[in-house]
Image 1 (cartoon, rainbow, N blue to C red):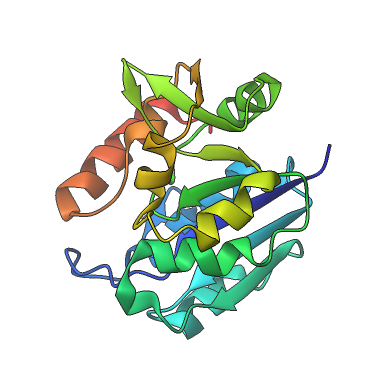
Image 2: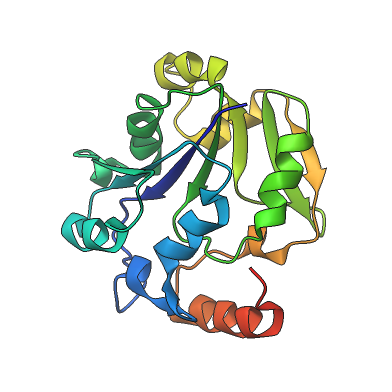
Length: 193
């Protein structure tokens, strides 16, 4: 089975003092960790950039499978980046993740691929997390149905399969300096991503 990956990285990092995609966790940046956790499982990885596009382009240069696209509508929010990426999906399934989830274990992706359903969502400590795994047959509906203002709207309106994982990283996004400190602490503790 061929899988695409989508990483949403167009946001402003407005609650951070620095551009969060370039922050370091160990010897890698946030965006590199996000990509590398799915890299071996995906045929292609589509990264959607917007704000600070040239900085992210430089970070992604070493990754052969990565295609960086520019979302000219990134100021409209994350769903505009989702739609931009979906037009680039070529394979039967795709992972979708915001670029600020840098400590997800590779095994989580593998576990999700074993599950059946059109939408697969990982669960940890009874909470839904990221990434999301979707069948590509949903793309037309996600892009064209005007009832959906966000991916959350779409997921809540459709059935999904949940997969219990032992990975707190699915719940750990990076919006503030405090989040960054928690992620660094978690990385030191787990350090087998």
